Image (cartoon, rainbow, N blue to C red; front, side, top):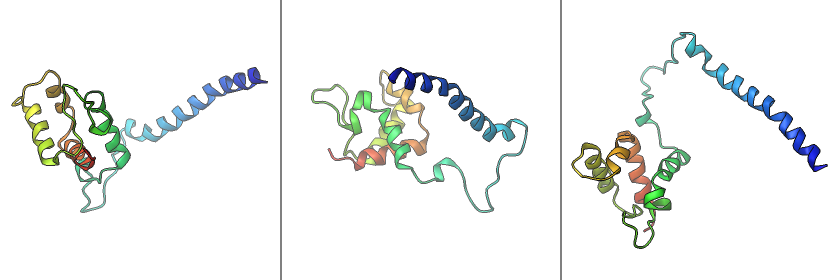
Length: 133
């Protein structure tokens, strides 16, 4: 019985993948065909920095920091990198800008900081500032 269930699941995988792929391709096909991009209503700014931060999105950004700074910015005791949890958002933004410009030297943070937009940097800073130390 178990073998039969596994075989059925394996047989269904290609169909599931091809269906989801087809749906994804269909949703972007008009852009490939040269159709104009969707236009926002007059007076509506759709730049990413104007959109409200989605909690799951911000958590996924913060997860990129976890390898060095710990989960939710809680570094392990004795870690060579500082914890980010509970620090001032303004301080965190300033540090990221210093890394980005090269004003603050680092082994890898200068490259990581360049990978985040200013809006993402602000969202990360606010996320870590809201965490308890």
